[in-house]
Image 1 (cartoon, rainbow, N blue to C red):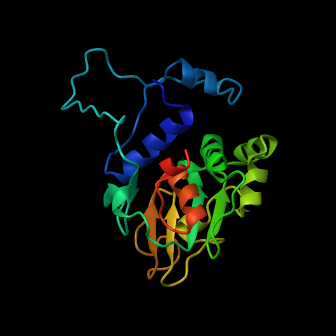
Image 2: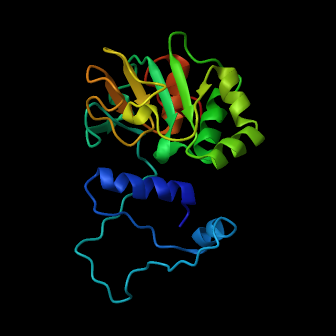
Length: 217
């Protein structure tokens, strides 16, 4: 499987948002290598039975898929980014348990490096863990993001559930990499939340409106 371990985490995390009871990516050597040095706890690999029969198997060709955006106020209210390009935003948010990993910030930094975010637009960065924060600092990514105008928040939960730092005001619009965009999710029932990839959020922060990231990649 070509997907990184971080991307597999996102896939499994978001499966629940689409109604699945659980999301599982069968472990392979890439998974085992990721676990080495991170835990000394004995673990048992969960794999499908060789003779397992499935209700249905679905395959998707992502090579020609346009970047997707979930519009307010449901995670399944999805459309191609071309349908919402130009939508004004007040805030851009990259982070949380879904998209707060090193590779997410690497993508954002590749778009923001040497540029400045739009006036009157806030860009919030929230690493998923202290480990990710330290790795981002060591790689110079945090410097690139802050220089572009971003504000780095403490690792953990914050704006996503409307707890602190990034809570929205009435009438505001946020484009976010979080996993939920229900009404009131980021602290204000009179605000709107669009969900998108780290690349889309970074590109949108540059223009102050929802932007197709392919313009900068």
